[in-house]
Image (cartoon, rainbow, N blue to C red; front, side, top):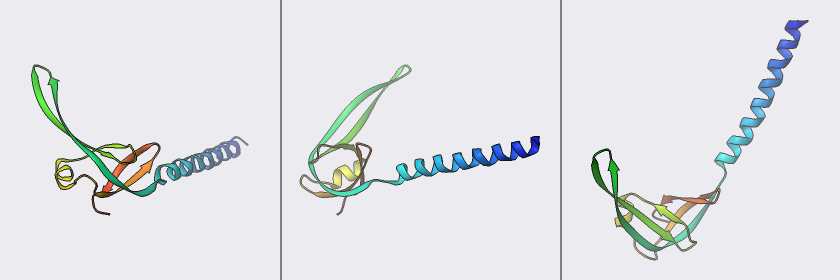
Length: 102
């Protein structure tokens, strides 16, 4: 009798884990791919303390016409110009740059 209850509990736990993970995976993989335009490019030099050392770090960001601000690598920053179309992935009130060519 005890083995039967243990098997039923394992089966129920597996059932609930499967359906909770499938909902999580669906939310993580959903998003919308959209076309947007570069409105402004900003380059900011920030001083960061690392123990006794002070290190300068450069942040490259682009502001899109939809209002999203995205940090990009230097290569993308140099290749993009104002008004250029880009492809972005919008998900959970944030955007990520997919491609700098539409």
